[in-house]
Length: 315
Ligand SMILES: Nc1ncnc2c1ncn2[C@@H]1O[C@H](COP(=O)(O)OP(=O)(O)OP(=O)(O)O)[C@@H](O)[C@H]1O
Ligand SMILES: [Mg+2]
Image (cartoon, rainbow, N blue to C red; front, side, top):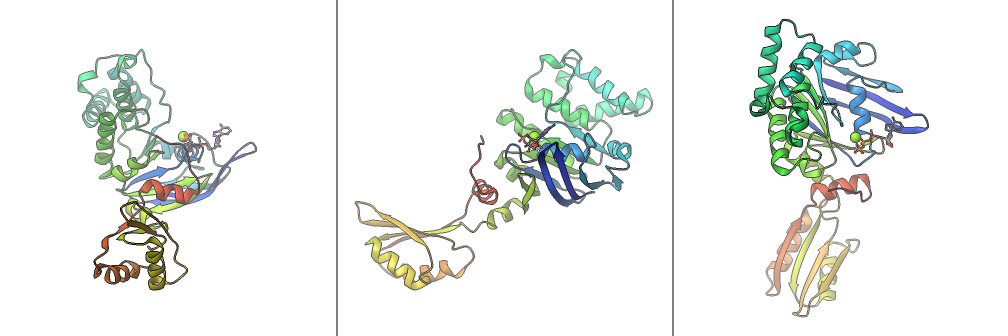
């Protein structure tokens, strides 16, 4: 449905994208995750033909953004980062305007299109109200409705849940899910739980490069920083020594011992060697001082930071 091939974008001397490629099949909800300035909006603007790439191309539904932008626009719905809504217009008039500017045909067809998006985005109760008088959540739903008015096969949404409260986010998420059943949805976010809840797949972008691609749970697994936690009633140094003897001396083990005599050990980089858990379990669990052994998987948040290699500001 979407095939992106070597997109590069320079804004003057600023390199915003340094050659990214990926494909999105039909019926997939793809989250585009990255910190501020990563190049998310730039990519989405190129895919929706609002700006041109410096190099590379993208094919959407068989049409090239470079050579057939009008054909691409017919098949793509777009919710920009800062959706230009006409605050004086009523919801109905705005959607009617969107339908007409999409050349949907007869009055009746426009009306049918409006009814469809009003239904998908649950806008009945505000249909006659001015956009300027709506809550942010409703405005965002109007923006989504506008993006889908021509029933596109591909939906591209730039931070659709930004600035919304949890209930509003839930509503947008359910619209995305419904749309993603038969179409391709590509949406950007810098909020990590967002991709875990809404996506089939996540691409991680940082500084204009793709740094991760997979299912949310796979992304978590790619991280090597997962660790084993061992609680042990007894001397910390002795326990560290025992663990190292068992697993090999290159294993990194940190720990602390509390006043109650219980040592808490963290054994790092255990994920690549699945046998570590079993070895520790069988060696320690038979002994009276053993309290607990568990594997701690990093959250997607930690995976993300590990992939982009630095801490970034987020909510
Ligand atoms: N019109 C422009 N002129 C010059 N530089 C730009 C322009 N638009 C974006 N950039 C730069 O390109 C880089 C990528 O920006 P982009 O807006 O694509 O990031 P983003 O991932 O959408 O970030 P955010 O999460 O803040 O929306 C940034 O360094 C940005 O400053
Ligand atoms: Mg952006």
